[in-house]
Length: 95
Image (cartoon, rainbow, N blue to C red):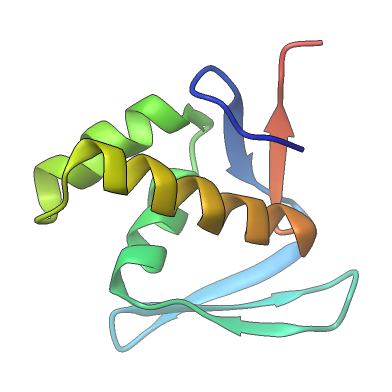
């Protein structure tokens, strides 16, 4: 699914995640795959614990990290699409 600024994103219920040494590690229950997230990925994961939009994510990330809005939106969109392909997030487009 294409992710735009108004779509609500949240963590999927079909995964198990834990923080290890400041970074998130998780496993997809459905697929049996293991994933490790770096600092920024871990922060995104924390932020989508509560349903949020791409705009809200980028607002938070640009305030915390040295990244411009356009780069943030592009990178976060790509990251969320990868999580979506692995079944690790739920995306609600309001339909």
